[in-house]
Image (cartoon, rainbow, N blue to C red; front, top):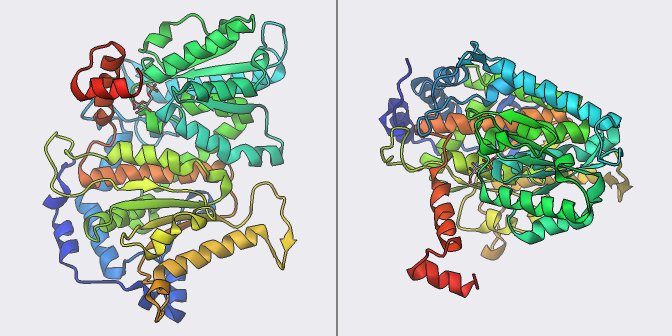
Length: 527
Ligand SMILES: O=P(O)(O)OC[C@H]1O[C@](O)(CO)[C@@H](O)[C@@H]1O
């Protein structure tokens, strides 16, 4: 049995607080010691990726204490309990099974006589079969013509992950001959979101995927009707243009006006659902089921490394521990995710939900207040765009923001030119290397306005190229990092009560039941 204890009840945490090691990055990262540190402070990840943490404010003593903390917090045992199907989501009294969607890490998990791994694989096979039939023109619109576009209607976890992964692989798929159908996404209840998408597609040849795990989300159900009305206006039958992805227990599961339905279940949290039917349907239609299978294989490989007890063979655990060190010892409030890859432009937005909805908690898993900081604020943009936007504050502002860079040796599209002595990809890579050193080491100047203090910590994940497997491995790395941090903070990372209050108040407004400030704001907004 594992012991679920608060971070401040752990001896290793107090040992960490007592350490007087102040790693000065501009000392350790300059000259030969910097070279040695970059070579030494890195660990292999799945799919040939590397996690390099040389520019983090850690040394061997801090790392040894973090390793003690991992053991005392029983991170490996807790992960084991999770993938073996224990009720880890205490708030909703649910299992947490997103790892099982992409591979069998431990024991069989059976619920009400159903083997859950078999259920997830069955849904994957059903989606693969459907996608192949759509691509082959065996499933068509009412005129017997092929669907050319697929549009996902969903929000939060039913949008962000699938959208980030679609954008992440679109160019790779076009280059490698795996591009089957263009995908679009409607999420916001702002009518302009649906309107822009509907105006940009040929509705007669569009297949819509309605995605809602609960089947009750206001935005998604509103957009479903909005889209069905648009289909009807074209003189078409919505039931011939829409499939559903939902949990078997949701109201949508009983719906009859869909071509077919694919299922997930209550054990897959929305923000962890990209590997389930939620991402499976759109990604298999856009790129083919084999590409989706490769993406899952990359995730499974990363999950496998997350089982290692040794933090130097477990990059997700190490990343999580360093993040807790920065949050609870160095007192950093924010973390930026900075992929030097345009294809990862929506990845930080997905991680915002994954991380902040998971660990943005003030009570522990037993509902008791915690007396330490939990999840940081997450934001990010792809480099080098961010450099010309918010990096000023990162370099010279009064807030120290730990940074998580991601970079690749090769680009995806294969199209590149030598311009003034270097390719664009080389320029991109030179920029990320330069930024890490600039953030860490800074620069002296008599003019304080031009002085860079340095001491801004960062890590980098490096790979050869962004592919289905490496993207899967990177996503699973972050999912597992968030999970380990939740274990360390002793919070339930798998519920999200904090989103409820706003939903209830909005319903009251729409039902004409508001008073006081709510009524005044409603009037101001012309409701
Ligand atoms: O898939 P559903 O049930 O429509 O939920 C969408 C999103 O809404 C949330 O519950 C938060 O509002 C997320 O956790 C979830 O990803």
